[in-house]
Each structure stands twice: as structure tokens, then as C-alpha cells.
Length: 599
Ligand SMILES: [Fe+2]
Image (cartoon, rainbow, N blue to C red; front, side, top):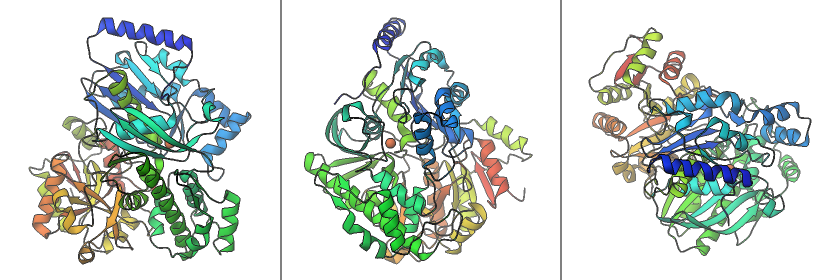
């Protein structure tokens, strides 16, 4: 299968000319910009021979959750909703249930967003020599961005029209530690594909060696869309698109009654495809079971837990079936999961444990928002032939801030920067004493999980800590669990975990004898979405947990994202200070500065 197509002879000639000029003007350095502009969420990523890999989500930059990036033309059509394209896109973006997400127009936002990504590198648009962009999957033939990019990046070769599922494959495999792997892509849908009679893909089974992919099976939207099925359940429960994690968390409270009634309608095939009820049939069946659609903001009843459990178990079966089908098609023992459905850590773990695969890798920003990194790594690894540009050591890909920038932000908020000689020891002491601490260190996480760079930390032991955080700090639903971060070398003593989970994308059992100790991070069904922390990847965070263990005997801290409900994770020092001041977070550890509410 062809993974990318240059759109038209004019672009091909222009790109050839720019490649030739680049070859004459430079030796082997490169600066590749990846742009994700599809679906819910957008981001930019840089892969540079001199500056390494960086990536930044638009919603963190704009401070608006789920922001999407569209061209001016797309924006105007959607807002007007007059054309078929405008109406369809409007429906897809809003899912026919909720308001449109925040939309940012590329032509006005690109420069300041790019500057934020490149801060401190000395690079500008003229230094970018290759742009690889995912196109809008709502309007692949009328999207203007690809044609316009050449104006903004005068020295860059422009590559667009890589298929949506191909980018997901690059995103997963090129960031993985594997030399070869089976790659399973699962999402809601990609773009309409002419080669499939206009159908979008929803499941792709593939394998890869040295970035050469073999695509074994492809299944289309809407019949075989796991993302769409889970989205129906999420919407039925009154949650919006992007809040699928709430359905996953709620599912642990449910009983099996809804699942037992719905599972006979799930038909799974040996090739990884599936068939299920249509949307209206599902609604009617749930209604017959006594589960009416929940309106957003209303109370959550036990029946809603049953509905969530049904959706989760159906998804578990679908993912397991697709993983099993892929295992029959490739001898690889390494499994990469790609696409937005791969963020469902419950299904990941159940499918992986039922399979013959030995190793699992899930890219930390597996959904559409993370496609910018797939584009950038594809540009560096395949188009610029830098074979070393593979594998992520860390998800800390956001641009870093200097101490002087932190001091300036603190002073602007009338806070005195107090230097702490051992920030890890001081924070460990605060946590052991029951205080809640905001933790801001290094570049932000690219994916949706806070992994020790933009985190709120607390003691994982007292059960009331969970309710305190939900009520007074995060302001979110009481059923939602909190996650543990554990020293990697101690993880097997506390959790039933095979291997590691550095990106908090695996849900495993807390060992039964440890559940009462880890009361604040053990979910109602005895599980936890665990993060393993290694000294190699994040030495300061590892040091903090080690010092907490020295005080308490527990090598675990409660780790949740540094934000309030409905807001993106904090990105800048100013964002962190604002969140700290407006919640009941007791102390802020930002670089080596420790600020407490009493100072
Ligand atoms: Fe996708």
C-alpha cells in the first residue's frame, strides 16, 4: 500500500526544486515540522538533527480543551453550515449532541503557535526544510492547508495527503523501542478514501520492519468502528467527545446486566472486523433495559455504571479479537497499538494479556492530536533517512523554560521565589504530611497523562484523599479514580504488572494485600492505571518517590494532571501559578523553587 501521495504535479515539481536547493545549501542537518490538524485536537512537532524532538498541543497553548485547527475556508464553511461539507463537518465536530469545540484558524494562529514550539532554539519558519502535515479528514479534497503551507515555510519541501491510518502507524512504531512489530490501529475513522470507494478506515492490521509496513487487513467505518461504538456509549452517558476516559472509569462500578443483553448483538470475525447494532437500535435496546440517556450535568445512577460497563466490555472483546487476528498474521512478539482507541488502557491490558504477544507499546499521545509527532518522525526517519531518529525516551516533549522565566512568572504573581536546596526531599516531606503539591519540572508531557512534569501529587494512602482532590482541587466527578506513580524496580511488589508502564496506559490489579495501603489510588474494582518511574527517564521524579518511600515505606505517590476540570494541563509557569493560586493545592514546586500558600 502506498503510504503517501504528493498531491499533483505542481507540488511534486516544487518539492523537487526545494529538495535540490536544500541539498546544495546544506550538508546533512534537517528541521522537520509535523502538523496534526485532523479530528479532535491539533499539535505541532519538531524533529531536528540539532535540537532533537519537541511537540506541543494546541489546546495547551490556547488554554482551550480539545481545540481543533482548521483553515479559514473550512472554518467559514463550518460556521455557515450552508454547504454539504459545512453541514457534515459541523455534525462530525459537534457529534450532533454538543457544541462545536474551540476552533483555531491556521492562517492566524500558526506563527505564534510555532514560536511557542521553537522557543529557545533560534529556529524560525525559514529554517524548516520539510513540513509533513496530516490533512483534515473531514474534507480531504477541499482542504486548502497543504497548498498554503509553502507560503509560510519558504524553504520547506511540503508533504501532505499521508493517509490518516498510515500516520497513526508511524506515530506508534517510530516512537516505539522496537525494530519490528505488529501494529494495530483502532480509532473512530480516518478520511474518506477514494481507493475504498469513499469509505474511511476504522481498523487496520499491519506489521513493520525498518519503517516498511505491510498492511494485512483493513476494516471500514462505520460498520467496524470501535471508536464510534464507544463514542455512542459515552454520549449516551452524557459525556462529550474526548471524555471517553470517564466512561472507562465509570465502567468499574457497573453490573453485567446491560452487557449480557447487548453481547449477543456483537458479531466478531476472524479477520478482526466486527458488526454491532446501529445507533438507533442501540438506543432503543438500552431504553428497553431501563437506561434512559443521561443529560450532561445530571446525577449518575447505578444504571449508568451498567451502561458504561457494557460499552467497556464490548470494546474489550473487539480489541481482543483484532489483536488475536493480527497475531495470526505476523510472527512478531512485539505489539504497538495506535489510534485514539489505544488510549483505553483497560482494553489494552485485557487484549494484551489474552494474546501471545510478549511486549506492548502504546504511544503516549496515541490519538489524532499526536499525529504531528508521527508526521515529524516519518519526515526525519524515512524522508531524511536519519535512522537514529527512532524511539522516545520520554513523553516530556514540550519546550523547556529557564529559571529566570520561572522567577519572572512568580514575581509577576507577587510570589517570592524561594530556592529549595533539595526539592525532592522537601516535597516528599510535604506529601507524607498530607499536603497536596503542584509539581512543574522540565518540558510538558505531549500526551494526555501527567507523568511527573506537570503533575499534582499527593499521598496515595488515605482513602479521603481521593474525595478531597475531586471536591476541592480538580473539581470533577466523585467516581473518577486517581493514578499511582511507582518506582519501576518496586512495581511488581505492589501491582500485578508484566513489564513496565511508563506512560500510564495500562490498568492492572493492585496486589490484594496492598489495596488497603494504597486506598486513594485503588479503583473500586481493585485496579489502578499505573505509571512506572525509572531513574533513567526521570531522575528527579524518581528521587522524590524514593524519598517518600524512605519516610513512609511506600514507593508510590498519587499523580494526577496539573489542571482543573475542563481545562487543559498547565503549560507555562504562569499557567501553573494561576492554577496553584485558584485551587486548594498547598504548595508549588516549580524547578527548584518551593512556594507554599502561607508564604
Ligand atoms: Fe485517528
